[in-house]
Image (cartoon, rainbow, N blue to C red):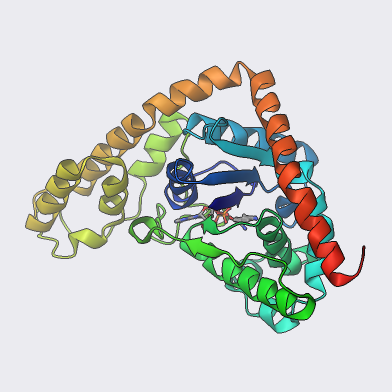
Length: 321
Ligand code: ADP
Ligand code: TRP
């Protein structure tokens, strides 16, 4: 079983990225043939600073390795180190109906948030389809917001297979329902574009400040809160604290008597402990960037071995070769 996922180097990674995509990916590396990559071509649709892209790419590599991606079990690489993906993207784009892309929520949301659309942003899901199909992927672990893109990939694969004969494996998204949507400090979906993130490896003082600044309602500490399970700090606590701790906080909030300040303090402490070991590993890796570069280089070579024959198969099927 081939498992594949990617993440854009578009800024510091946050708890939404971690619980939605990284942790499920890391867990799956024991269950199949896992391919994970840093989607630097995709980041070009919304980030226009070359040095930042280079820096972010290295940061994502450090984050992923520190959090437990094991390069002995998984193939870990930079998207652009296998540029064959851009050729496949062209083959696929000619079979992609405009309407399919026009319906993509992610595109519509980005425009609604003020990003000025370029052709790359519109065609983004086709490049993502190429990423997935180039490696004969069966399973794609992603957060809920990426589900539609995997469905677009399925549609494109089926269309190509119908037009040119059986060529591509039709993949399936894998979404963990318990962490499908991690909420941010303002109660909305946590996202780099909404300025509401809690970073995985944020600096201590700044992250404490962010957590203490989480938006709550104006009910007094004494008031019972029958909707305690909807509280965004409780929801995050469930991800980073043992279940008996988070249920205790939830019960105290529900009964009344627990102030939001104390709840947030508890959240910060558990968040900080949860990533303690990974933080140490990241600091060590930062001292050994040659090793990180070697991992990515080796990953690219292994990825290419799979990609090359699949691209050749697609070229033959459509009459290019
Ligand atoms: P962002 O919205 O911050 O730009 P990306 O779109 O780069 O995040 O997402 C990278 C990965 O992390 C995707 O698989 C996505 O589904 C997952 N992800 C991002 N935000 C969340 C969230 N709030 N909850 C769950 N998963 C998320
Ligand atoms: N679009 C994904 C995101 O923003 C990143 C991505 C690019 C991806 N190519 C992919 C994810 C292929 C899974 C499979 O998070």
